[in-house]
Length: 332
Ligand SMILES: C[S@@+](CC[C@H](N)C(=O)[O-])C[C@H]1O[C@@H](n2cnc3c(N)ncnc32)[C@H](O)[C@@H]1O
Image (cartoon, rainbow, N blue to C red; front, top):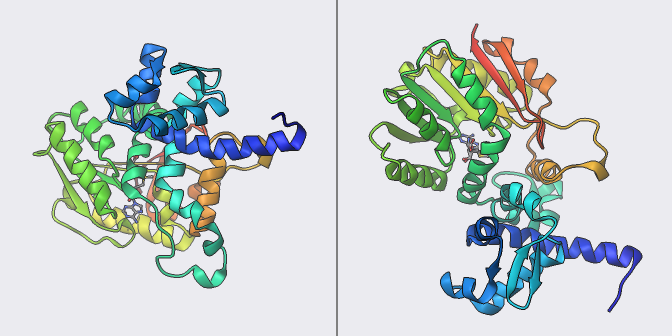
């Protein structure tokens, strides 16, 4: 069977949709790491070693081969031309298919105005935390480390808003062995992941977790001692503008000892043609359109800090996929 022109292009769209799930799965079952470290694998031996169904495992590698991520010769699977880039961006695919799959599956139901009230969509918060841990490692961490390195004080208590997997706090506590950490998140499954990771890392006695919605949180024991506040990949949930200003003010008053607030998030991309969008941007922005979440531009953020009681000390413009930026704030 030979196909050309738009027939071929559309087949590629279809195959790519299947491959997007296969990238996430291949990451989770360890196939991407094995291919990266060994340079090849045997599909049937891989299936046996991991207790996987042999036919389903072959299907997984076929889906990856359809978009040139691997090559197959009988059972032998080797990396192909797109392997390195898919490996680098695998967490974006995981975010899309595992974390946000339900959102896209239900797209037609999420479009009508009349359906968009209350908790009208679902995502898998544990899967999103898993993906975000890796997304953060290359989209934020090198700049985050610079910001933390540049602090002119040693924080004794650190709180992370929307802590997800808790990885950021774990990193900070490893860097500051005397510090204590407080992770706050709205999703119980994320906090369960975080608590178990803290336990495995031997940090359970220095790290505690609070189940709360940061947007309407009030004072709690321990909040008044926090000196470093961090918030990554959730600040857009503070918006629209008036609510964002209100939340920034409230954070200032419930964390009165905060000397620095590191706020890192995606911002709305401006001026890229639809056809030229890199991996992740489209998924991220369409998902937030479906969820009715406003994604602020950098200038939107810059317009709220002073009103919210914070001074912008420094801005790290990262812009890898979704206009990532870190704002370093201090109390006004
Ligand atoms: C995209 S993940 C980022 C996780 C983590 N900050 C990181 O850098 O990897 C967003 C996290 O914010 C949490 N979250 C979203 N809205 C929240 C809210 N209103 N209050 C508290 N947590 C929230 C989600 O449950 C999720 O764990």
